[in-house]
Length: 155
Length: 270
Image 1 (spheres, rainbow over the protein chains, first blue to last red):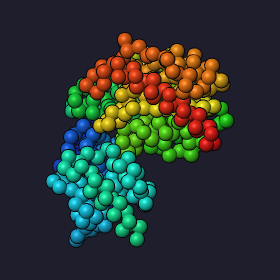
Image 2: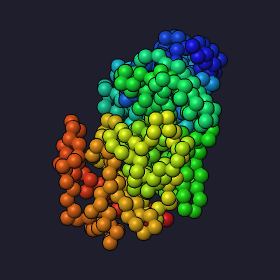
Image 3: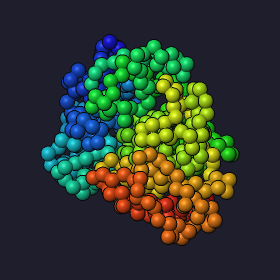
Image 4: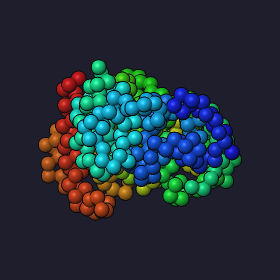
């Protein structure tokens, strides 16, 4: 069984894993970090988005062994111990979620988007969130939340 | 998913050896198609040979006449590359419109070509630009590479290392994406290289193909108007829940016109 060693939310982690183990299952089942969700399991919905070496990826479409040596960040890694980060706060204030199932993926994708583009237009936000599906909100408030979160993060 | 032996070689030679040592080996590029395929049990390889550790398969280099892209270069990297944006902006634009940001961060040029999905974007660029697919064994011209639905000229165990794109005088890609998957319902790449026009269509047929009548018309006059009156036959096109063959035939004409307009506009802007 391959042994992998990686960093998850800045903590070193090493484990023996089957080749076929998906990164999302490693995160949820092995590490117990259940903030990352499995929605469709077919790489379409984006509920499972995490950052691998700073880039958003769908962790249901990546093997854990492919993340060997990588820096992985999950929703737990971008949340303060108490309260919410500015983008999460914006989702809360702008009602950017209803059931909340897609939200961890939305936040992780939007964090990377804002990092690349601190002042995104609505079109940029919609293009950037194309890989994240929400079945509740109709996206309007999600776009508003990302716009607001970006503004707060710009300071 | 059935388990498999996982290997991550450092060189192309090691990758070939690892493949040959397997009873049913499979190369893993970005995995954006292969991993879903494995999950569904549509492929059950004995060994997976991950190409991500091979430095030689990465990177982008440009000369005046040729842009060379390593097989394991991701779509995101091609889209953001200043070299690609300068040499063949249409190729950067195409890469930036594949799938979604997460897919673009993992998916690779070589993986897309080896898979040859009939709705993939890259095959249209490779065919229209008359690129050369370089493998660990030989150089395959685009016209001989795509042999059918999910079929290519690659032999068992043959590995794409690079793709050499001629720098076009004018080029553009226009696609009508499926709104959910962003795969092309119909996509048309138009390119003029050394005065000769080539038009490649993806998404609409069982594999990427060239539109000869459009090429002849654009050879005479590289304007969208030149395409007027050219009827695309729906005979060999795909009909599925997303679009009928007739609708796809119509889209090919519309996308070709938009691509020509965009190609001429690109030149004007530069």
